Length: 435
Image (cartoon, rainbow, N blue to C red; front, side, top):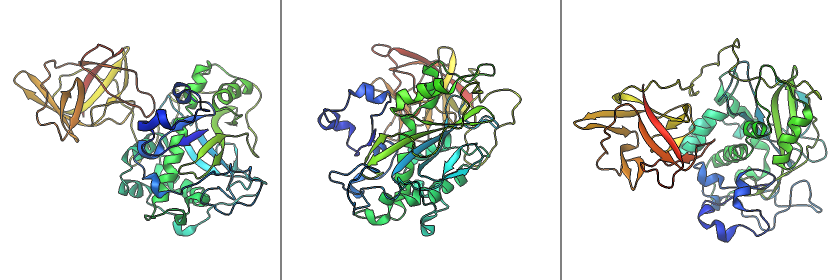
């Protein structure tokens, strides 16, 4: 299950984690139980404004009539977090699946990716609803998220919630209008002090939160299943790799014998905003992949059409060449001889392909750096860029800086970088790329 926790969750972790849950380390590694503070991490809203649910029932398992539909998802009982692997054109990062949506669904129909899609909230009896509230079929999803300050959430959506034709924001609008408006717990009446459109932030925060805890690419890789132009896999191999981590069977989608979609099924105890997402058996649709000979092609395969371009899409970062720090540019991080993300505007190391822009100023003894957040300096041994920095650090080297970190960033982790090696086992070189 995934627990979307209050904003102060992590600071009170020891006191608040129920004894029945496994250790934190195992929670973070996936499986049927995962703890995640979605609203605080993704810049979402104060969960105190969301429904307060006392002893909520698990959707699809109620034994009596539930009157409070702000704490019980009905008629859509089962939720699906769905992911794409698009290779033609290649869409999103080469080493990550992308988000399709968060659905409360049932009823079968065809879609472009070959799966039989459920098209509305799951009543747990085979019927469905879709596009439930035309008055809330908002078209300006990006503007809504920005108005609530959900910049981290928007950044992650821009990288990982991709449309294969390049129309990302049209996909977001479609997913919200078709599926988000049908989630009963996201009804505006469920909020104690409702702010117009705040349920939109909660929907996308929940979807991205679930996605981060279902890293399909990494789970397959851990099981020896990697994108290849020559290898093929069986359905049992793929199913075992994912279901063993999710905690229940998943639904696999193939088109022309190529793996291109995965659905993770959940039931919810409480509201989508603050409830517990428990891994569930698939309800309705069946996998469309053959029993054997399944191909899993890499996104970077030669000969395919180039990735589409559109407003606000992210672009691939080329390998840095290591020029002197001067003028405007990006800080490219390398570890183990390979480029791995960038240094973002606040000074953290982040696995991203859309880098922050820095300005390097030549000083008598070297150079200084500044980002949109402010001047950059080493503060308490940590590299930071902030408006609170009054005097920038002058770096002596001009072709690459050596820093140290506790780990290599993955997905949405922002990793601090240090000037001293002591206690920090990962070495990285930061190189300049003119922009």
